[in-house]
Amino acid sequence: MIVTILRTTILYIFVTLAIRLMGKRQIGEMQPNELVVTLLISEIAAIPLQDSTQPVINGVVAIFVLVILEIVISSVALKSFLLRKFMSGSSMVIIKNGVLDQKAMRRVRMTVLDLIELLRAKDVYDIDQVAFAVLEVNGELSVLLKGQYRTATAADLGVTPDDDGLPLPVISDGKLVKDSFDSLEISKQAVFSILESKHLAPSQVFLMTLDRYGNHHILPKETK
Amino acid sequence: MRRLIAAGILTLCIAVACVSGVTYTADVCEKLEAGIGACTAAFESGDTDGAAEAAAALEEYWVEVEERLSVFVNHGELDNIGTSIAKLAPLAAAGDKAQYLAECKLAKTMVIHLRGDEGFSWHSIF
Image (cartoon, rainbow over all chains, first blue to last red; front, side, top):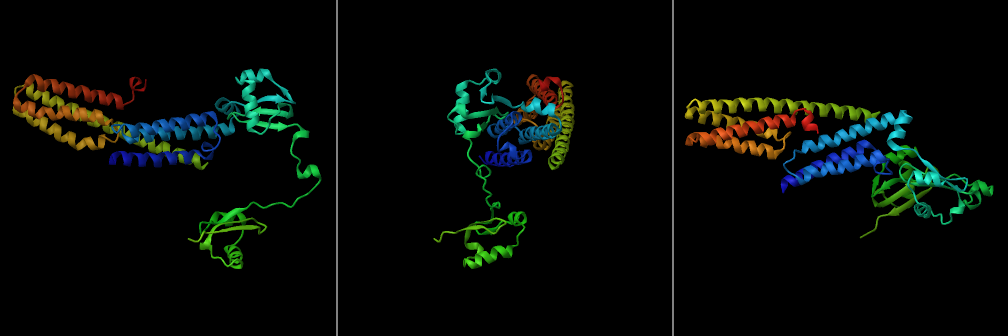
């Protein structure tokens, strides 16, 4: 039992490290090769967990070989269009200038019902509203609506709204978030001044967000 | 760039682990085969006391190396070899030649199999 606990802990640490090494894309939308690597890692990690006669190092080495391959191939693919196309494929335009390309749909083995489902996921319920639809390599459908169906923007209305800064959390659960201060290029004193005006100490704040224009939002901790 | 450097360091660590694992396993297997050979030779020459001593020495060596081997090798295989080696001393003391030689042969076969599995060969890859 203790052996199982220790093996699980060791493999958890190594798998987490492996996923972190491969980068954020593994956690977000995955390319086909990234999906393969993620699936393989989970299968490989399970083997030493289930079979205590297997040395842990076999699983760890296999996982890290996959990580190395993924890092090297993705680094080379950054420079090589051909390799990128081979590993990830390329996007396919399904609807062009409002016209459905049935040949393209057959090539990607997509039925019209699949297309309508993907459009609905993008809040598009009428295929006639679509100017362009591109099936991306990760299976997502990117949609550009025809001009008359697009949401009006400030530019369309001839209005110039004020730019918003990016609000970043500067206090989280009573603790200062140092990275946000560097990004916002503000001092801690500025934050303390705002809190003083609200008669609050940092330790009393659950969440405080601030942007570069000084717009802030404070959520105090609940008192028990 | 940082990830490439991390990949490079990992590659180095894996290479070192693999080389040390294969080298150590090969070295231990060689010594085990020699030890088993000595056990067999002793009994075949009629020296049952010598065979028992050789078996005891082999078992002692096995106990020394088993823990480090278990880092690289399937524990089930190690258990089988250990069980086989452990039988040798009592069989030698009892003078059971046929069974003693059979266990020596079995242990040697398992050690050869172990070396083949852990080393590089097309058979072990496919």
